[in-house]
Length: 435
Picture (cartoon, rainbow, N blue to C red):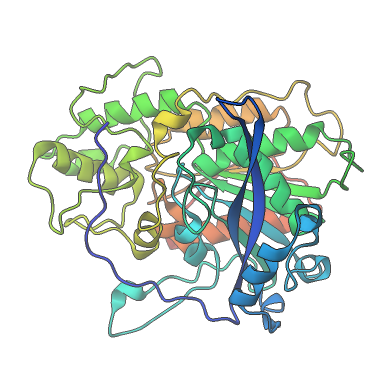
């Protein structure tokens, strides 16, 4: 399939100072059988992660020292973690850590970091560097991001056998052990929501006290933001949305907050504008608005259903530019996950351990329709502790379009869960003008 390239307007994101974040590396393994000898071959890959936390970041460890230390650690010692990130460091804050899983596949965590952490820059000389204050936790919560294998600052092998949803969930489990997380929240955006849900299913199948090797941490809550429960059907709905765009009726298109597409729709690679829901995460490569019909329709799709702060010349917001500049080359786009259909746990959650509160979030104009971002997930979770929040004026990248509104929705849910309050049965439409 044709892939669209993002706008050429790149501006440098203001990098976090050393007292705002720390980076680390963790080794993960992939095993494959040699075609010639039949022997199993083990390959070590580096998974990069970033931790935001004020009191954690007061340590003197540098990024260089951290990377060197992580590289020197043996496989058996991986769970100990790098020096700046001890069990006490990560878990003793007033609010529990939030572990964030980015989307894609293949779009690294850069677009989420300025949106979920305190990142306000009111530089008057360059308004493009301005971000709203989207801090989650008021500076009292550790927020952890990582780049999945294949993109960002993590290893990017060209062997497709190293990539799968199951392997990514394995990596997530290992990162949780590596950081010695005790109590934490899990957040997944788009494809990251699929990973978060699959981890949730696996977590609920574990013995509460031990999985045979490690103590199982306490998963406090799960947030699925704009996550597709059925990738193929969402992909097909996106094709119909693309076809429905009439450039002479932009106002009508902007009113389409939820697709009326049939879940049984079909499309072919030859269809005009046949860019899948994940592949349309980038806009045309020219610095001005594309002149061809297909590119114009693609840009309109982007502006209405993907990220509503994309400008008319195709310039995407800086957090997305940063992520796209580090985008993966191999495990990327809808095609590699097209057959994913979320399935319920083998048995309904009967214990409190398995009745983990779930927050479902989508933008009002999200191309992932209500059916596949709310309704099916509620059925799959199989309990009532589910909250649904629709963010008005937003689409797929709500945390980029309106970080403040997105963080209000997320903060309220996380804090209720930490206070032990009952959540569930709620469906809210959040209006930015009333917050």
